[in-house]
Length: 401
Image 1 (spheres, rainbow, N blue to C red):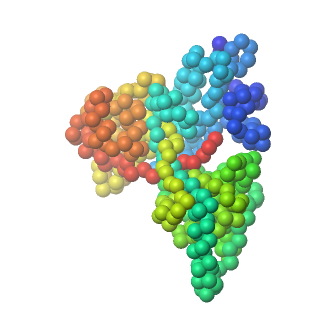
Image 2 (image 1 turned 90 degrees about the horizontal axis):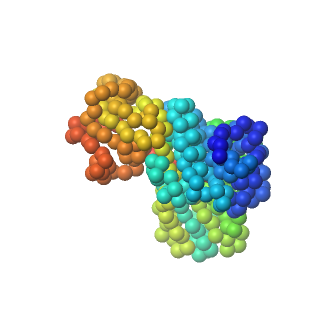
Image 3 (image 1 turned 135 degrees about the vertical axis):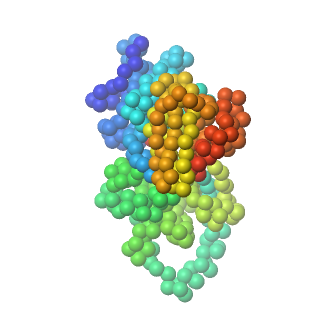
């Protein structure tokens, strides 16, 4: 048995395993993935009996974290042939991948788990819940009844002309500018979307019988969303200007086939307020993305403190997989600056396992709940100092691969 990182020219050797394990993916999607995404990604494999038996892939993304931008990697395509499971291959692949992340000083890595229990033993914890809506034919019937009145009122007001169309590769830069201006400022953690990101996304959605839909009002771009069609119409991550939700719904209706179920993944809170109580609507928040801190000093340095505060504290961290994260770390900020300085020290005021610290810093678990854990030790002074860190972190991660 051998674990190794493949050369870029070897990436295609893993396609047979992807097709064998991820049978739900269409031929068109797999063609796209192995032609586009594996050009720049990293693939670790386990070779046994003269062939690849397990793999783990990491796709690169640029990610904003509290105002700083980092190159990160998204773990995908974790798979083992059925006959070679229960041999610890996945554990060894994960450790190899995490150690590389630590060496690169990437603050964290993330993934979309098939099941939480697979990755929680490796200190991955949920950091992002996706708002979802499901709209059936009853909803659209109710909307159409109300729409007759709205259309008359719109004509009376002289509503601006709206046009929708699928984006081409030449639209990518405009979409990136739209996201950067209207959506990115809302989030402390999100993927940096440049023109290359959207060019890739357009090709990805086309491989899933969909596209990237643009909504214009008098030539002004007012909304963007991704869509795909398998058994039903699936809308992903609508980014719509405030008070333009009606235009988004019209664009969805244009795509919807008769009595087709529509799923909206990554919908906005405003959409839930507008349509959540209409018959034919089901809403939920689904835990979607798990993350793990991979280079602790880089992550801690990215945190923010109010310029009106001074912070100085130290605590021990226990990381059973990445020993370089384990140690006693001092965080200090000076009055008048948000930046946090991080160094190793010897005097500790408390103890955090790496998973508990992940939950604390991403703000996903209440502080009181974390401090009540048997393996967490926190003095009252340390807690007051850590409270100065901005833990109201807004997160927006909807990437699939």
